[in-house]
Image (cartoon, one colour):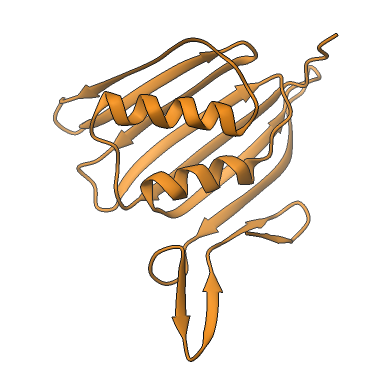
Length: 159
């Protein structure tokens, strides 16, 4: 029997190569859902908003265990996005941040991971992501420096 574990990830960040079409964002959503072991029950649905000051693509996907949504403001350089994933399944914020980085070149982000299992929401983890160098890795004097995700919960760096 499925036992829900109510977890909510909120991310605000900046990306190098923002999605511009519903096709790209819908494929991204589908692959994200597969990567974190969830199941799509409706969507994804994405649309480009061409309203001055609010230009960018927005999308949602309905999951058997809840939802994910994103809005990207692509007129900004780098493009800014707001993302959330609420699910009753277990997943890690690092899985989501890695997926965003692989598809859109995550430059930086701030995130909170919230436990919603009780009447009071508890931030169980939070952190900042900052890309170092160019691309996912860069070489400098024979050393490799990787992008990293630092968690405030345990002070560890995730790769």
